[in-house]
Length: 339
Length: 140
Image 1 (cartoon, rainbow over the protein chains, first blue to last red):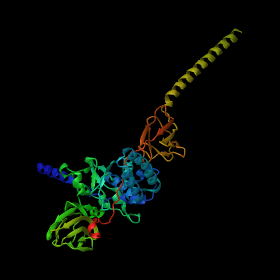
Image 2 (cartoon, each protein chain N blue to C red; image 1 turned 90 degrees about the horizontal axis):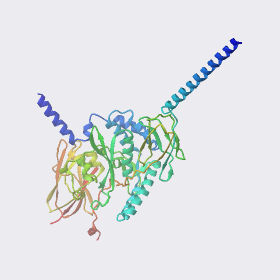
Image 3 (cartoon, one colour; image 1 turned 120 degrees about the horizontal axis):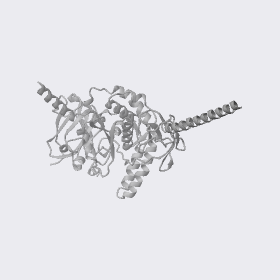
Image 4 (tube, chains in turn blue, red; image 1 turned 135 degrees about the horizontal axis):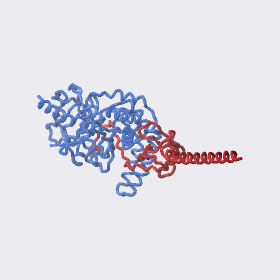
């Protein structure tokens, strides 16, 4: 009996290695979120005090970190102008290390000034603030620098690190989160940022995270060695949107962004959902360069949280194919159909 | 007469004893005062700067407490609580490396330059805008 119990314990502990936010299913984070909400609008002039106010009523590490993370996501805006300015100059000086370094020093000062006075920043500012507030609360947190793939960047030629996120140690285990992408969505045409908290980026599954986050420091994959992709493989991954983190636990197929197939051949789609859905909630969007339309895939199989289906491409052409769940844009692939 | 001389002699002896006793007391008291000065709580002042000069708005907190001070427009501060040897002050400012300073027997004024946290500033914007392939052929 004792041996059986030991085996069961071992099995449960191994199961939890893969799990992420599910490790804290016993916590609902309502209290942490309400504390963060009550402190909305607090200034950044006294970070030790802000950190204390966010965490002193909470007992678990996960809740204390949650209050900090949620406050940053709800109070710090993504500054599209700063992003463009930095991106332009980094590209301009990318082959001149001295000028590149000088620009980074100058921009660093401007960025922290804007964050302090206007509570507006870019990725590193979010990650830096989460880490600093965590440090004051004695929570172990790191800034992760790397590459982020989004639909509006040139997804196949990422040549410079362009994104920062966080790793946090809770109950002796590391987790990943992305406060920048969780905070909201800026509109690139109007430059206006809209706060819209996306909970999917909090303690996200590292396997899903790996589809569009490539850390420079290998230890922040939080994956087994055999699951870590090469940079070339990463650049060939599908484009994932923020809504993927709300709806998916993992993305299995198609593993690549671009596909070339013959007419009447099919492409397989396979996902692990966060919660089960009905077939009619799944749609594929098509754009062949001339027109756009949506279709419901035929032969959808949904077993508990597993979603699988295929789509047959009958006509030659070049298609951008988008997956939608309940009108949430999840991911994009391209399919060239030719004889 | 003899009696008077004797009395004067006794008075002088007593006076001398009192003087010696008081001097002893004073010496002991001074020595005692010197040993307690190091352990005595005292007001700590200071000046915080960065690479550009005095730094207004820097936070100074007594480690593991909420007691703190903020530097004025000239980068100066007076800590609101008297501190003793062994207390630790935490100096912080957004974008700079947080530094801890332990109060020693000789600390009364702290001059500290905070160093920039040299993190590389990068940012990618996530959007809900669908990916769109470039199609040169279709434009022709």
